[in-house]
Image (cartoon, rainbow over all chains, first blue to last red):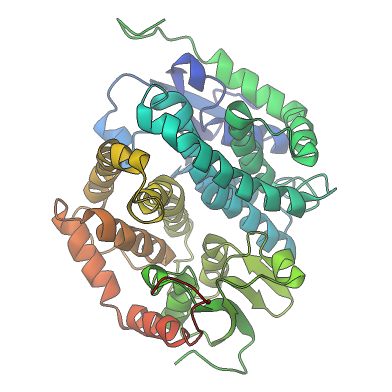
Length: 226
Length: 226
């Protein structure tokens, strides 16, 4: 179990987020990567509804999680943290140039060609669900997301993982597809459904998810809707 | 001038895109990086409105540009291509761990924490501009984008570049902020306005932009609105 209060690596996470976000906060990505690679880490917990310190904002300008510190290094953005971890372990990324390039390409594909539209699904389905514009936007947005899922499904084909073997790109892609699955379902894409099940079935994913969930020990802010 | 028909590196670009996209296509990112680092490249041109070959889709699942080939390597996603180029030249990214981590963090910040909402601005201002939902969405979206620009402006402060020196993170951030500037303006953020002017004033940016524009020699498809 990589959680170790004496570990060199520390990540920030939340001790409270609204129910819809529990299990989906971005610290899941580095937790999962470190569980895969057997890298020990400890956590520092923040409350999502409380203000951040100046020190924290200096490390994470948007006030989000995760921030990783590794000795003297401080890194924000889960994509950058995944890259940093991948340089430590062949389990997370192959060392050969072609394997690295493919891992980088699919990592950015997940975070820059798919996740942006997952964010928009999140706005439409959760944040602004009761707004007229959100209802009107849904059909064209969902059609657009399908136009992105089709090539992703075709590119995966019958491979187990996007580059042929498990990498940090699969960590990013799984966390994005899992949210798309919440809003839209993936029933038109049997290979993506099987992929998501395969990735989420990895023991390291399950341990990371449990560790994130176990940290939600904080209280909802006063007046927060139940 | 890095354009060289005998270069090892090739990128794909377009010989035609609609007017609103000219000067903003993603091949601008690697062109700029290679102009900064003095890396020679050649181009292979596609027409945005014509179907892609199976070979191209195998290299770029979404059918977009750019794809980079460098000897035997084939890489897609402009973020991954920037990383690949940055490993070749200190001009694009420092070699020390702290400098690399900061470059990675700001590269992902540009592409995963800012650009997703620029895409939504693009939908609202260009693609779906005449739709009722787009008009209704604009105020909340613009407010959200400002909530992202404020911390970006605060993090830049009075530095010339995001990590203190020019890197690929500035290439990504400039290309994103430049589009936000088109839709929203940056007049509330004097340091971001000055930053954008500083980055776009770099001779390498200007050469990259001219090279992209010079490649638009193709014809609009029949019936395409003038």
